[in-house]
Image 1 (cartoon, rainbow over the protein chains, first blue to last red):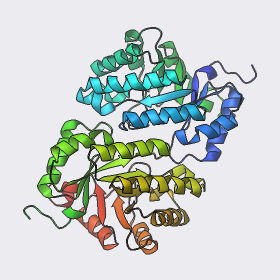
Image 2 (image 1 turned 90 degrees about the vertical axis):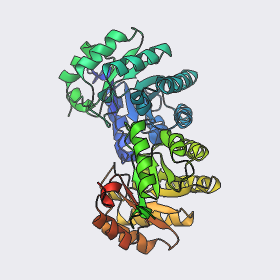
Image 3 (image 1 turned 135 degrees about the vertical axis):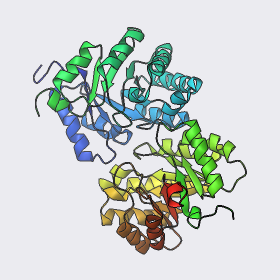
Image 4 (image 1 turned 30 degrees about the horizontal axis):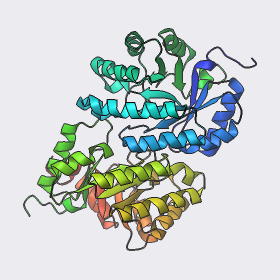
Length: 220
Length: 220
């Protein structure tokens, strides 16, 4: 395919800053179309606009739920999921209740993920659960990966890119070891080069979240 | 009153980081009780816990809606407001649709604030509208202050403390000039000393949002 770089199919072409303009989001969509990125990852307020711009293309629309702090109520995250699906999103990148996990309140994390992952299935959204590995111990990563597996999330995603350090190779390798084969990994946060992207893909990541997509495929 | 510093009554004692632990939030509440701060400002996920800790005290519970990016849907913000009220919050610090304001889509900002400010009134929550002045031109500040006045928000609040610079004296003075007398101002973001707090209060701020409350009243 014209302009198809081998890494394109892995890339969520991402712009999530709160001041992102309509023009910037339009450009993001046009770049995703031109270079055949897997998806754009955009604020919820731009989903319907992206659906109009990307109309009938193969580029998927991912949006974020409870982003970036994750401490919004389950009910409000659910409302975001419904609206995202209705407005044309294909994928939902959902931040967990980070503080609850850190407090050891696993049942809070589990109960919410049960609700939200099922809502995604019902609305045919790919679920990508952002666990914010940079704030977690190995035991906490293991616990939340177990919950994601139990409720059959589509992806576990390493990081928001906001609250802590981004993707770390050893962490992705660890997640790949402990997750069942059918649960995919999205590595995100601080990935800016093709070399980094390839390293994470070799470690088992099936998706790369990045705002440096053009640089990664060598056109910027 | 014992331990009552003259600035205490202005202070929203604030802890909004996504990794804030239950123990830290409990300490925040206990400090607010001991030093008679006006309110604690906490993540939505901790409102019911704070209601239990602060039971029957005069310290109010403020929480945040659509925080810190503001680009969650109006419906999900509304869900957060309902839940906050139900769980015992007294005040709602609501982030506007920042990108819509920057895009010049004033009707999006207005329609949402109409809905959310009215929901606060209905649920007897003090509404504090965070406009993120650090990202706005004077004209944009003027436009959104006009909307806040039209729908009778209780407060206009300068900043999230996350997305841009915090409170600026000239900006608070400008807001005080253009807002009707009955709409109050909360200055927040980067206020760490009694001198700064007094400067903003002299400029017309009726509330100070800060994570340096103890330092401001000289006990830390």
